Length: 273
Length: 363
Image (tube, rainbow over all chains, first blue to last red):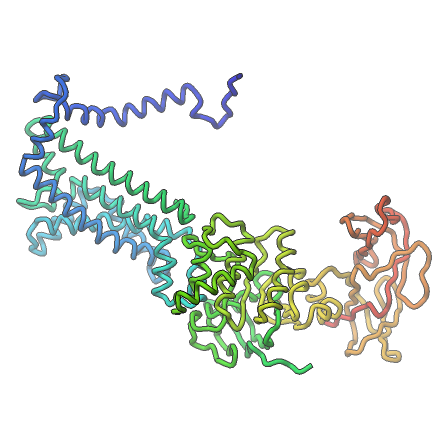
């Protein structure tokens, strides 16, 4: 059978385009693949391949301060995700639904944490906490994480609501539902994919945040990224690679799980993703 | 015929949006129990706003709405004895057909065993039996419409409100649904109030039609009365097609008006209302008679050249050369097959109509 020539917009079937794609993939993913590969390398140094081993994973697991940092990261990420998801979803809904004085200005302000450089946010947070004489620790880290992930959730939820048919709520009211029932039965199910996506975003942002955490953490409240950084200052050991690989694996698993849930619920409920 | 108790009374209702836009302007209406009532008008005439005020989604700026003897002022939509079918259907996308229909019963605390009985009945009523477990996105537009209908009817409302229910359906389905709506209304006996911009839809479904323009009700009448006796140029023009001629009243002779019709001449036209000065005469296109020979005397007649003929299958529209600046159009039925019509473009024909078919419009 004769091969059909690609049509003008079928770029993925063009040889030169495929080459560009390949180079891009290498550029983006080779460092990560190398990092993961060398975490299994049976050598103290990340230069030559000396055979497969899991001993650096065991070593990382038994490294108490590394493990503590990992736990801290999970605590901070868990709490900040829960709080910023609830607050962000409420904010997103409010911005979609209500008109109020100075709404545009308010709308701009809440995007600020997304726009401004992380380092500025970190310094500002540090200044804020020291001004109020709050001891730096897990509490201050969690509060800062809530502050920078909240607008991300709000933006995602609001984008989701942009496609909402307002008459669905009116239909529920018309059929006898009160305001709370309408929200619970009609609005919330529609918001859900946005909320889940926002929560995922908040979780991954919190898990791998370095700069802001660096400014707001105190003694004994090290998170995994900070711990890894302090370890790298001496040398990049396979142990660091192993810890990083675990972090990558967690975020990857979370993403895949959430996307699967979303895709399935989207299919079952007839909701566009 | 004794007049039935009004189920909806609208007393001098005005709705002003943002303190400046008057959507509904001092409307008073009474809708009787068991009626199929249509609110008809071009887009932006306030008909949907009026419907939404009955449903409770908007509050009147001035005036009162009484449904089933109860003043609706301050009553939330969920406590009103009316239910609505939305233009976008508003079928809940994350619930099955059965759950959609059951929703209104569930939230108001109807017992589970009663719901189990009522839902299939309602679906049967709209011919959706067996669709219980489908999701809305698996249904066609027409089927979603039926779900919306079943969901509203299962609540056994005093009045069913329909907001442009058929506008999103294709032409064939729309006609079928019009007939079905009428049958449905007869079988359930609930008062239907339909909002539409389509005159065909209003004429074919409703017992009584209120024509609205710029927030005001122009005429309330049955379909026949509205078509044959519109009370204004607006109604005449909006409902169906009509030819309009300018004329001047020159006198009254035994119950008829003597007219000087521009471009045609003097004629006697029966009319009972008062009329003087300049008026508009209107004639429906299907009432114009086209002949090659001069017709008998008791009609208005003149000779005209055929400017264009447009073929529509069952009928053809014959455009006649301008008489004093007014284009006239006659609609003729294509009874014979084979030849399209004996009327040829460019030929000269006799145009005539009965004086009794002439409408005198003073406003």
